[in-house]
Amino acid sequence: MANEHILWADDEIELLKPHIIFLQNKGYQVTTVNNGRDALDEVKTKYFDLVFLDENMPGISGLEVLKAIKEFRNDLPVVMITKSEEEDVMEDAIGTKIDDYLIKPVNPNQILMSVKKILDKRELVKEKTTSGYQQEFRNIGMAVNERLSFDEWKNLYKKLVYWEVNFDKSLETGMEEIFKTQKHEANRSFCKFVEENYIKYLPYDNAQAPIMSHTLMRRGILPEYQDGKPFFFLLLDNLRFDQWRTISPIISEYFRVEKEDLYLSILPTSTQYCRNSIFAGLMPSDIEKRFPGKWSNDEDEGGKNNFEGDFLMDLLGRLRKPLKTKYTKVVNLDQAKDMLDDIPNMFSNDMNVIVYNFVDSLSHARTDYKIMRELAEEEPAYRSITLSWFEHSPLWEAMKKIAEKGGRIVISTDHGSVRVNEAIKVIGDKKTTSNLRYKTGKNLSYNKKEVFEIARPELGMLPRQHLSSNFIFARENGYFVYPNNLNHYSNYYNNTFQHGGISIEEMLIPLITLAAK
Image (tube, rainbow, N blue to C red):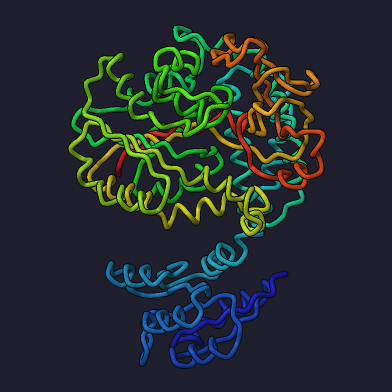
């Protein structure tokens, strides 16, 4: 039975006695008052879970009481009840953040539905989520064990993220651990899919291959350009699909989602390889050949993504796309503010490309700083921090300016990340790459059963740094450690978000087309 406490303020409260008895019989405690001042006194001296508030009371009006309540207890849900259907009254009430709005005369079932919608929402969501996932569990389990096509993998991952985000919204359902196990099984099957299909997907002329990093501009971005409409390609570094789904409700206030797709990242799933590949429209080994002075291998000093703008202009020339294009990279708050200020000038361009580095910085900060580990200890918290940042970021302000001008935006990323918790031993020399999810170097020693190996880099269209070089990739939630420092690495990196290897979170990444409403 319910035990929530409701305050009902109405100057004709005696006429509502049947409604009040109805609620009491349903288990709700109801306190009644017949004017606004008494309502405020009650709120200030007692705890209530919900207030029913008559809009038209003598003395202090319902709207004035509503504003005073929100100043005192902003989290207290308020349902406005009124005889008036005038638009300005509704707008005033909505602007003061009412939780529901009912027109007199009301019947007991209307009142009960409003109460349940507000007070029982989380419990109802929990029940709905639990029963829904229980029904879906068998279908997902069967799909995971089948030989899926790439499109089927996309649909399955969307389904997994749907349930993952829904679990965030509900109380603990008892199904979370079952879901984690099922997602782990999905990741294991996805890794097998990648190992069986990755190499044959790579040729540029393979029309059957999914969109990948090196074909993203040609097949995923440029086709969304429309003459005469401001067009922006926003690459939000390290944005996972679940993070996109977390911020998308906010974005939908200003934009219509025309397309919500996923594409396949190349390996390694790291910025150096993926993002250069996106803007060059080439695989890494071909970037090295075409731009010998602008490609940096893992063991080289200095930045690895210093020429993305040059690669993009070269690609547009090769594709014979004479678009007036501006490339902007944002790696700190000052640059973000400069980008925001520059948005009005960007509308004179055919295409604007903005690379925004926050999410990648967040994942690294979570590794390096104890406080960030505590703030984002679990996946739901990681999504929540992304949402909180986005809501208050210059990026969102920039997107709203683009919406005002009727612009189109494609949002995508270069790779995702996965939370790692399984150490994999590897031995290499001092020049072996430091990335935890992939290694390349001379004379690597490892257990072949624990990794995905590309023994000949040219097969993966990757640069060969030495005659004996090869590439190995961690699967699922594994990460590489050196045996002589095993405990240190395990303690420091366990349960951190990393990228570079093979997982559904790293490789199936968002490709979203937005049109201003």
